[in-house]
Image 1 (cartoon, one colour):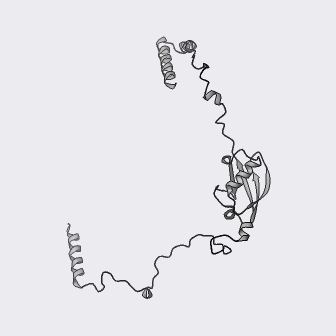
Image 2 (cartoon, one colour):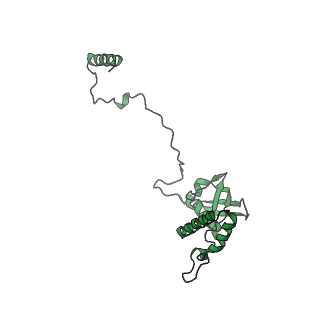
Length: 199
């Protein structure tokens, strides 16, 4: 230890042993004498509904309450519909209704926006709006993943046109592009190796 550290330790130990502690190790201040309540925490953000009953169930008014949504499409196909939903319905149920009515091909292609914010599928309509709302609908284009299933899985008995590669034609093209025939043959060999590895 350096000199300042030794000096600090010796002074600290001297001060600590000068007098015995006045309070025992398990001392607790009575709650009546506590003047400070500690750190003030921010209030919890919770929507309290005083109309709900004490047993946790909702009142008859809440069960029967409804919300009127005006759904407007932003992009083509453009539409504007006004439907009534229960406040206990979710955003996903609104999307499913749009699909049922033929406005979209699937719920995964739909995004509902309220005042520019995207609404998530699990949100209840009661948390989104109270009685009326205009919701913008964005329909994304369907990805064409299953456009040609015949090319992905050719029949076992049929011979695909890719199995008979026109290597002679490729060799002629490479010979015309390369001045040295050895370079053309090397490029052809590399193409053949790559073709075999890709199978």
